[in-house]
Image (tube, rainbow, N blue to C red; front, side, top):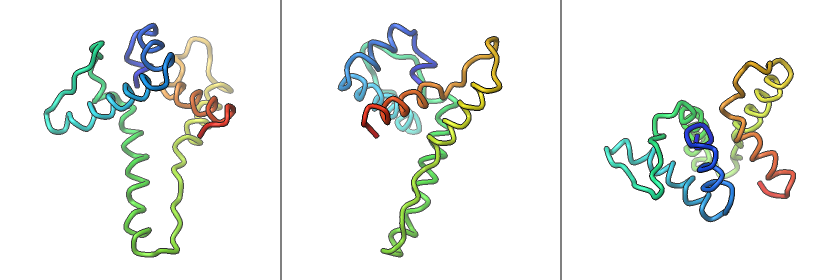
Length: 127
């Protein structure tokens, strides 16, 4: 969401140069999303544009809801196993399709930073 909404230089400064700063600003975006439901607006410096209505939040909402829907079954049955979200693998598949069938005049998918970050973390030993 930040990659789509911020100027590239600001995105790089806040989300790529320092892990602690990146974590703070990721959490700020989530806080903005949650607090908007209560008509509250968190404040940051530097000031960021509103992101709480970005269309990618719908994908995040769906992924979170799919995980939370498992809770009643997990609490009721101690032998039940949590089923991990398929969100990232679905985004990777969509990106692979875009690479195979996209063209240079088409805009890259909005999920591109998610796919690249997850891929990088996995190749570097994270996630």
